[in-house]
Length: 405
Image 1: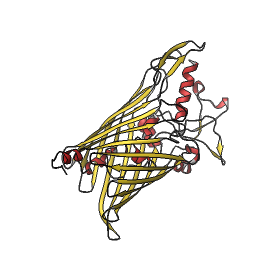
Image 2: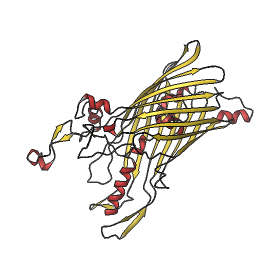
Image 3: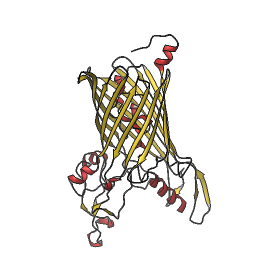
Image 4: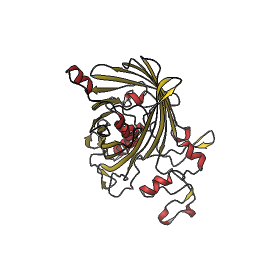
């Protein structure tokens, strides 16, 4: 049991940079309380591909690619190729633990000029854990893991706008059925949906061919999750992401894209409770002093997330993260990328620069990403991530077939 608690603590700590966990005793940074918003299965919020990962974790309005499933599946309707897929690999906390990693497989197929279907698998391996009881006796060994599998349908509603819906199954197996506090644990399971839209329009900018794009994605809107029958259920990371991008063809060989995302978790903010015993509620439950009760239904929690921060609107604005990215292409074959991610110090304090490269050959492409933290340590520090993309149109050209536009 003791070892299990240690494992759960380590697991949460792994994500302390990606999504800080709630602290009942808040500490202060420059006179402001730390009050991070937390959820179960935070692996769903990790940028799984190297292209977006090298541009500050942007992606809702970038040009379509096989990895659009995670960021905005509505983009698939604007792809020029008939089919594509990609494989991504991300080592996690590689400087400390060698066997923790995130793998991502995504792909799409166009039904016709207006419709597309897509799917992805996100798999997070947390390595091997040996469970022991209070006496130190070995209770078993297990390899905790989490995964999410989803499918999406996207459609053009006009020449410039598309929409998509995705359905997702989530499985989080952290204990392998070990008994926790007298209750048998089980994998946490949930189902969720994404609803997204994408707009793009060709324009002239200083006489140069350009494309402006906007995207929005409500993701992971779904049921709460728990790991034992008698445990309280936790929210999954319901999320709102919106952003824009501008791509300009500088000349026949050079192009540039500038993009930015805003991101907000749509789950309740932890409130401030009274500390005195004489104000406890029924059964000793604490009473909310500032903010809103977080023990609410999923629909209520989704809407409540916009106005429930204990410090009001100012704190709500702090819960928004900002990402900006830049992508330069030469001859549509070689790319240089950079970006920056910002999160307020009281909401997780993630701040980092990202760099990356992209290479496109006849039938496949390679993308690399590297992260440089500026505020605190990060699980991806000193780690090289990569994505392999397959171009089916390239296969057809090599076989002498006419590609489908």
